View 1 (cartoon, rainbow, N blue to C red):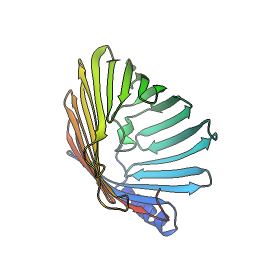
View 2: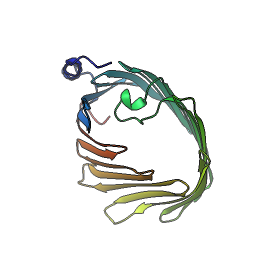
View 3: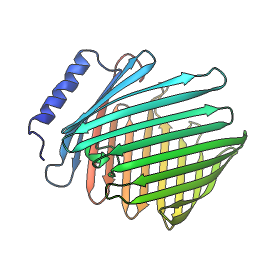
View 4: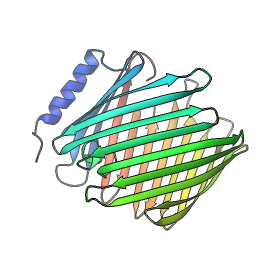
Length: 278
């Protein structure tokens, strides 16, 4: 079913009205394109702090998503953050929820998502998967230098095919942080090697993680300061096999992401901030 040809204009107009009414601590306008017919869509994202909650909205040509998030502080005991989102489009609907908390040396996170269509069709920034997705992760700090981690995942896609994943890691923090681990993803075994540290006295930070074996994936992120006002240049790169790649750049209010995954796409966004940092 094709969206109404003027729906994207309506969504962009709504975004402008939200900004004019002061709706949103931030407002982000974007344009996403993918090679192929009828694959160009504007995107609008807005956030609004409301008491202890943060409300959010995101719109694209044929879908709308509404969400909320917040956090609970337990003094010196720890902290719990949570979020939820519902998305509705002409091709289907989706629900997402997540929670993360820390208590002393223990930290954990939980996420759940379900959609009756590909989540990327409800929001261009999401993965091109649908169905049920569950994730559970935890970290235990043995001492100030050593941390154990565990990640568990389960997916049941739109075709009814179920897959599981598990990853065990050990991180050693010295002047830099080194991470070693083993994992399995849908019966594919792999090893994990990670490194995180500063490259110079200016505070340029590099974080890289390699998963190699029956599964191959390289992730790298570079952050370097641009001025004294906490503005940074951020670069992130992901390469994986079967062949897919993502290259992202964030500088001041401009965000750009180029991606290859069975086709090329480009997403360019510009972020406006009202009344402080979101």
